[in-house]
Length: 245
Image (cartoon, rainbow, N blue to C red):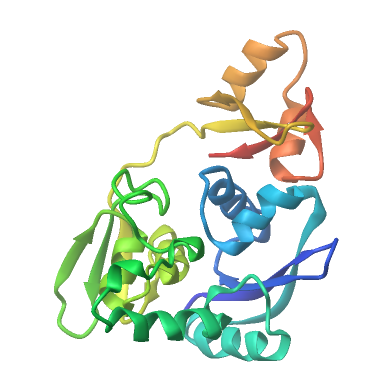
């Protein structure tokens, strides 16, 4: 059984929090949220990244546990902090929506602000990553999904519970009674992108570190770029923050 961490992301301007869990390294989890924000995710945390700037946020470890304890441990910390950016604590929003849907005019109910699966954000799968496969641990039946949001919607009824599924697929782990795996082949190269420090917009994309150095500064070493990639949001290179795609 793999182990992971429960963490919080804190807005340093107003103290608002987000509680999450992961089996990835903290820096990779941070890049995951950064990438979701750049892809215009409508989830509260990612909208806040765009509104306040990622430099006004910090990530901090809260707990460490086996992957099987993720749900109970995460719920414990959510109940303790009542984080403003977690969708699942917005009971005053989600519960009335379920009641309104039963009314004669369900089309008037809108939950798009909370990142629901809609015609606007559905179709290319970029909001939730690549195609994945889930194997039911009880029946052994395998099912393929276009992305983690579709899998979460099918299994839990809530597409916003895609985080655990996506992370499990990346690590070959389990979530919601299924074992997950990515269906797309991984490239031998590691694509990277640069975010302008002033505009906080993605301006540069390269297939590898070598391509970036060759294009931007062929007379210098790659150490500065590698340092930025290993410390996302802390060190810059050539006017940009750098991240793995």
